[in-house]
Length: 224
Image (tube, rainbow, N blue to C red; front, side):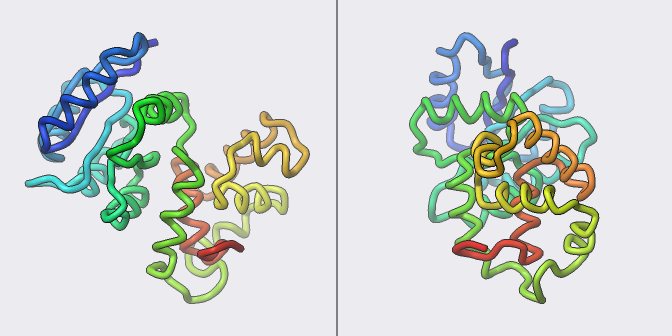
């Protein structure tokens, strides 16, 4: 199956570079490009796309708001935020808006390709350890009204003890395989637990599990 990719960036040279890398892959095809979020949304109305590589700083409509609008649709492509270290706050906002992960703009080609394939196959967290470092950095910006506070905290009361264990490990950036090894479970069982967590908490994917864990105080910067 060919992965249909859309490039959204106001810098033509960057889009050209990404397009050349993706065009060399037998399982990927760049089916659309846009110079800003507004153009991207317009193109998506008429173009079938699996994964969107989304810049954050763009004219007219930035990548965060574009991601929010794209992900609010019932059926929508996966979104990978493209960022730099000095724009981490935008990446964090993008994750909250529904993005499936983020990558640095200077990421090695092999990592970018792996991230696209990973997201397309349903693994929402791209580079979990990097995601955790970003959330650790911005955790102080999140509400601190008490452990497991707010609506998210109330929702977590629906989780079983095992599901809470799994959620904690997801929030720490562990993959299904790593969680399985830690809890002495099969990967299939862990995947089932993650699916139940998403359903009970009304979340789209693993990235939102991580964000919720930090927002509710289940996980704090630097660890549990």
